[in-house]
Amino acid sequence: MNQLTICLIICALTVFSYAWGKIKMGTTAMLSMVAFVITGCIDPATAVGNFANTNAVMMLSMFVVAAGFNRTQFVKNCAASVNKIAKGSLTMVMCGYVLITVILCQFIQSSMVVFGIMAPMLAASCEELHVKPSKVMFPLMIVCIATISVLPLGSGATQFAELNGYLEANAYTTYQVALTDPMKARLPMLILIAAYAIFLGPRFAPEHPVVETTEVKSKKDNKAALKPFQERAGYLIFILVTLGLIFQKFLGMPTWVICLAGAVAMVVTGVLSEQEAVESIPWWMGFLFIGSLTMGGALTQTGAGEAVGNVLANVIGSLGNRYLIGLLFFIVPFLLTQVMMNRSVITIFVPIAVLACKAMDANPVGVMILVQSACLSSFMTPMATPAVPMAMASGGYDLKMLMKQSILPAILLCIVSVFWIMTVFPF
Image 1: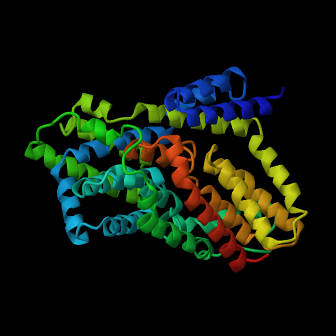
Image 2 (image 1 turned 90 degrees about the horizontal axis):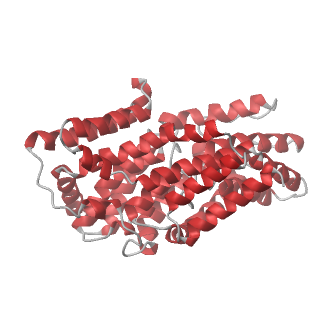
Image 3 (image 1 turned 180 degrees about the vertical axis):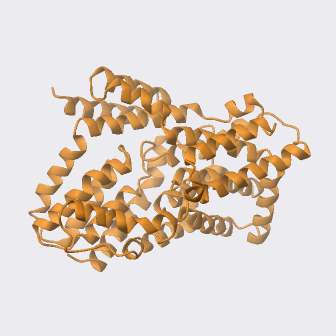
């Protein structure tokens, strides 16, 4: 039995354990990590290095920053103001938060960070309305993921250059991607996901968390109000962290440093005690994320992604319909990104798309953007992107509830993406 087969078996058992639910997800993630190392699917140094992954540090730090922000009255006052404007309507509340989230997603190239900024305020608004966070965290999460860098602002202004780099690398410069092409291709998806999150997402979300949330844990103890200095420090630190993340490129500082500095500042200023900071972190989620990094690394190292890509390249040669070709180039990367890091899948499938179009003397722009869109829209499993386990912790979802909520928006995204992009950017 070769390593590729062994890797796929371990992946299947891991996903089965997540769905089964009898073993804690963090424990399952660590067991699969050990299995990948023992079987040689990934080298030990790479596996251990995932514990120091900057995204993991950033994610766990944002929980501390959010916990400190939640200790202030600023969150409650802000939530009360939003609810007053919305006149108690959850739909209007979601409309306001979704619009702000979409705007932030154009300047902050991290769905996890945007979710970490918006989730505490949305949770406070829901508390004012006596609505459980389980009703809103999944809709907020899919907006954070699927609308990143759609408009040619901030990080979105570099998307066309990256895609043109793939064309040059594969010696197919007959066609070029324009600055506004990614926006033209993905704008309908932005509108679709925003509308879904506002009007449909809360309707399909559970009324109550199916597992304990981080918010529920934090409310078990009746904590005294913060002193004036700590109160001001709490929301000042949160605002500075948010601004730092928005203007990160101008500051020249890594995002994980900004988040970690904010978390440390919450403790140093006394907004949170050391114990409160540690308790605010859902460690199982950190282990889950580290395990997912290991799984993605194993799939890449054993060549699973390339194997799937080669099969796809052979299949499209027999297809004459552009929509069927587009469907394959969306579904395969979309599904693979549920268990592999999106950057790895993009690196594998965009060149395959370019070479396939080159062989057919076809325009590759639409297919390239379609692959990119599929890889940037992964939200069906906790292995897809760090924002997913964050939403699971905040909304109290298990894997079954996550999958249940994901099916409809995933189908809608697939249909709209393939039909629109393959129509606007024909071969």
